[in-house]
Length: 186
Image (tube, rainbow, N blue to C red; front, side, top):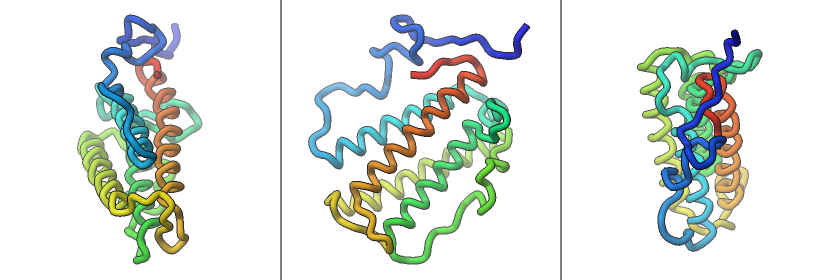
């Protein structure tokens, strides 16, 4: 008998998908957004929702489980990492002193991502707050070619990097979730 969970899905139309396309909350009604900034923001929002979907229905132990040895990565670790990434993006935008890390300088190995519901709740709260703060800071700069901060990064580059960062970690979340309980990605 294997310790590996059996693959499963709630989808009925495509058995290798997370959910049926008609039930997927990432697919809104209506036409696609107008403009490059709105398009990038929509893709970012979709990837953010995907990450939340990958974590839904799991308890603190499952979220903190390091599913692919020898990696120290976990779903909770990814959430905490993205909190720090959101804060860091605001550091790129501003000219002032950088905002400090929330989880410590040495948490790259996700050591603080422990199976404690208070840690899970705090991570979700922190992520929502940091996402809103970064979104608000960038909303003040709708010109995608504007250069910001000490490094002179273009808003476009930062927006594309944000989409890329979440997309990459959604791929990690697919594999982590499947190792936790067999739920397949999409």
